[in-house]
Amino acid sequence: MPALLPLIDISDTEVATLETMPLLFYFKDRAVPMGLFCAVIVHLLSDSWRITSRKGNYSNFFTLQKTMETCRIINLTLVEQLDCIEMHCEKTADRIKVKDAVEKSINEVMKKKNIDDELPILAFYCLPQCGDGRDHKVTKTEDGIICEETNQDFQTNEEYCSWFRSQQDKSDNCTKVLTIGDWNDIIGILDNNGFPSHKWHKLGVKLNIDYDQLENIEKDKKESYDCYCKCIAVWLKTDGKPTYSKLIDAVGSKGTGEPAVAAAIKEHLSAT
Image (cartoon, rainbow, N blue to C red; front, side, top):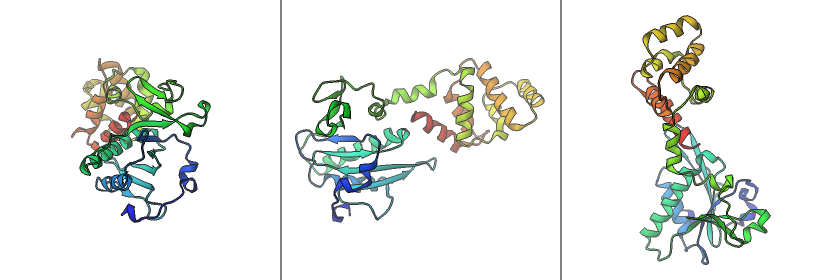
């Protein structure tokens, strides 16, 4: 049980050396409700998160990780401060998933335990150029990401905004129409997520490339990787409205037989 672990001086932990800006679940003008932090840890552990190590965790400092369907591991560190819970996630691509998971846990724990308090607001420590950042917060509002002291809007700050990419932004990656100018990125995404190039012909069929065009590719290119690269180029030029959504469906189809690669590509696009 996290509550049975000892407390630690946060300045003595690895959090002090993290270079990323944490997202804060900020209880403005009040302390974090007693017992909430440990209850959130327990809730996350019940939702497929796991403890990375029995050493290095405390009742006010906890590191967890979770393995996604694509076997990719995401990491999360939570730290309880007086008026907020810090959430650290070094990989920008994982921040949306981590934020959603912790926010859901906090909301459900507060509801289940009948904690008669307002839900925390999302915030950050202010940037150093605005003074001693930890003396005041930057809060997420409908109007932007606003400094409490100066009212300066930081909504263009990439470090802050990386936590708030909308679901619409994510889906746009899959539905936007691609061009031959995207060819290099597409090949990179397929390669990085493990698509086997020798399946280029099956992929071409599922991308509705004409039989004659596939035959020409095979005649022109001897190596399977070259055929695969040419296949993607032909698809981009002839489809009319090529999208990542179509590519994902083709990769994961029964004919091509790479559902894990398709899932990995979809997850990659949702995080960028």
